[in-house]
Length: 377
Image 1 (cartoon, rainbow, N blue to C red):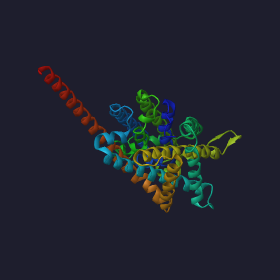
Image 2 (image 1 turned 90 degrees about the vertical axis):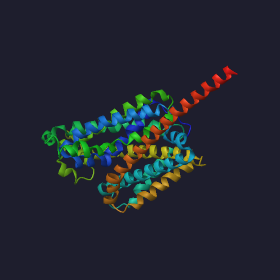
Image 3 (image 1 turned 180 degrees about the horizontal axis):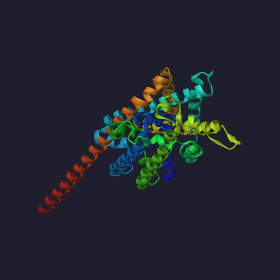
Image 4 (image 1 turned 120 degrees about the vertical axis):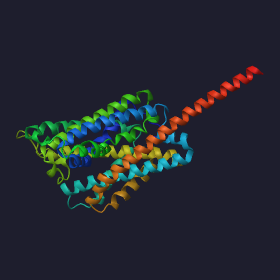
């Protein structure tokens, strides 16, 4: 897998898959809980901010063609900084993907498998992830080309299927809990765009790095579209006070869909699609972590790295005792950790760019001095 190069479509599907699975599990509920009836307005706002941030990331990364954030860290601070940043990203990806895994497994246990031990549900996901990651060529990325459109289609179907039951008055008052919660405190909902952090690792893996700008903008726009449709469905279907009490708001909305007498109770089809998509999400996380691990260690075996990462995910997932604890981590801790990692990445990219400018000027100055000295001699 380490030599796999991906095209534009695979890269876009990768970023969108990250966003999709966060939205299905916790982000939509968190946004509606925080901003109430102004959720749609808030999502439009953070989507614009995310688009701006993604473009800035592209501009900074474009100064270091074929470099990811680890290569840039090595350029700026050598192996020590590269090692520190690698450990931070590994911890971030492993801990919070394990948190989402625990959340999803608990939801499945409550809804479908109340008598099944949570360990077995988690281990099935991880075994499937290991299997996908150890397939040859670019199975992880190719599978996303299928699952991402299917999940987006499922949400569009969810929106259309429930449209007859929409209560459009739920968007009032337009500013929800107030101006601050919608635009200032509501800016924290930017953590919905988790794909921004994965963009930092894309350049070395692209077949054509010149397409990074298109990939970045397209993936954020598609993610924004998906998030807007998801939030619209929840806001128009449920009161914000009701949403707080729902286990998975999008799943609850599915149960209201029926297309005549023949197509009813479609929740099993939706949940199956989301399960497949979540395995794709875990595969992307594991593959990204394996690449990070290979860059900072002597681990070369893909199989060993994959098993090691999934083992850590299993340990972290089992550490959360119940749904309340894992939800706190996914809704609160995860949010602040995202901004820490994004802020750290911006600082590294900006400082590296400044250092590059000074090194370039210093090199040009020395070259000019040598030229003048040679001419004088």
